[in-house]
Length: 336
Ligand SMILES: NC(=O)c1ccc[n+]([C@@H]2O[C@H](COP(=O)([O-])OP(=O)(O)OC[C@H]3O[C@@H](n4cnc5c(N)ncnc54)[C@H](OP(=O)(O)O)[C@@H]3O)[C@@H](O)[C@H]2O)c1
Image (cartoon, rainbow, N blue to C red; front, top):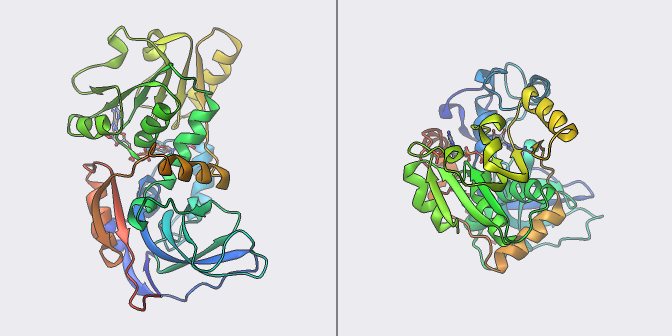
């Protein structure tokens, strides 16, 4: 089968189209014919991991060390990137009960990666679900990563209808899903992003948008029940006066300092720092499918590339100008 393989860390040029062996499903696995995949934060990070020093890594040192062990210190151990996908079940192992040949599915492979290929295998109880009926493969393939992370992290905050939520980093993979999911929970949502993406974040349903280059949201006098900072660009000390009495400051990216702040604020005061890791669960993806079919989550394709143009797709995402998501279409010559 065709796949995009990389055997050394580096710029997009390390991604090469190669012929590799087609995987075979184990008894509990499904074989998926991939129709679309994407380029997101995880792909860029893993492709260039040699250059990611502990300081550049958005998590504590120990996490960096474990990630290096997992992905490889000097060269990649996992050689096919791509963590989200949409496709069709081609065959299933003998113990598979949840899916059958022909089912159209979408899913998230997380750090296992492997979606930049014509086929992939994954356990039937992995993060895979029937594709939303109202989305194409391309539209569905770019949803799982951001939506799973945002749903999982926002659920930990127990958002209630009518609460005020600010998403800092609202134009990215997690942030754009967080805006839509917080709206679904009934929150009043403010999205913070750069000027070129204000309209995009508005189109996601944000009630208010703030250009961080023009306005510091911590100085506006507004207060929020939840400030969700995806990249951890703000600080708890700066945001404290923008939190309501029992407000929460949620971080998707954090260091040891923020972990200590989490412990400290749990013991003293009413405003809390929460550093949380999202867990990808099949049940969450099924819930996301239902939200999509109910029109609560939409998918925004910025650019499309073919599998053989994956390096070009990475080059575009590396520039940091995408509005929405970049999708990679996997064409199959022998259509079923
Ligand atoms: N906790 C977890 O379980 C978990 C899981 C996965 C990922 N993560 C973390 O999430 C982060 C990646 O998130 P993502 O996939 O959403 O990234 P992304 O798609 O790269 O988006 C990041 C967004 O941040 C915005 N941004 C840049 N500078 C900013 C600033 N000063 N203020 C506000 N926004 C700014 C950028 O857009 P603009 O140009 O519009 O500002 C960009 O769209 C990583 O740090 C990763 O470690 C955490």
